[in-house]
Length: 422
Image 1 (tube, rainbow, N blue to C red):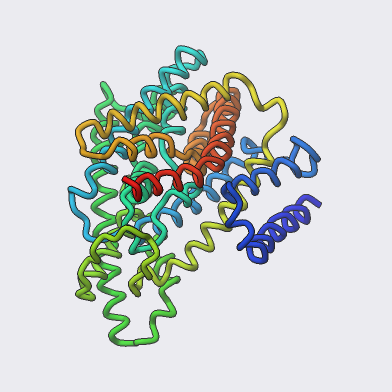
Image 2 (image 1 turned 135 degrees about the vertical axis):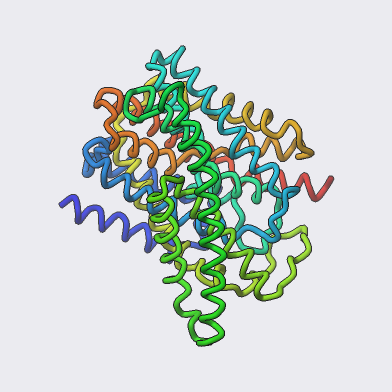
């Protein structure tokens, strides 16, 4: 019965997206809010037809969220404009590595002093909630490979990197809880979890993306019809790069994102296509490339995973899930930790203040946070602590879907209007 209801709900939502898409695009909210509302209606909040228990199904949810994040990281990486330069990447790198560390510290302090969590659990909570989400933030991310908007670029690039840059803090939190080896004075954590896993993941990803771009180019020269296999090549790259990165004890999320970036950049170089000049709009048609040609299927997978996972989030919530602890934490993350960390991370850059404000608000929390939470549970998090972190994380993600989903269209329109009249 539950399976039948699940198929009916997911199928009905997909039909609605296909048949009513012109109307839904005009709604002043994101589709994630619609999915969440449906999940809450059929879930224990209203009708009680379905209840998803993330503690009992943590292994399944870990795989689902892991796959969703990987597909989204690939899609984000191949849409980033070329070329890769420090001047362009400086701000998102600072956001992904400096701002995220500040966010972890601030959220950990809130959890330790106000929520009275153990230090390891508070730090783990900070790491779970620190990364922004590449799955649910589609409305504020790069739309296609020729989208030159700096705000979207910064948010997309940041989300692509910080799903990996948060991992060392997850391991540190687990280590303080006695669930991961940190070494004497934390030396193993610094050398392996921070330095090697980060640098190695980036290096493996770049090498994999470059190699696959050259192999794909040779295949196309030998068989002009080989572009039909672009989807398979893209999925194969995600699996191969991620698997190699994990086996090498590096951060696979970073590896997949940088593999996608390297694939795109290398293909442009092989094609001899110069980088297009920046334009004020974002409606230019995308350049035909192997990496870009594989996007349609990946974006369909991304939307399907978004529907499924947001429905599951709605299906976990009860009326009494809305505690003051969880709601106050969410408000702290959105209006204190995220803005302060962005201001600190971008303090040495020339990023315009209106853009800093937009970046500070649109730190969408979502599927990546759920993955880190399930990862921690599968690594032996005690059940009472796991239940507490599930409760806190789900409310933060839910409020992020609602608050950011309601504000994205009016704020983006206002931001663009302000730029045009400036």
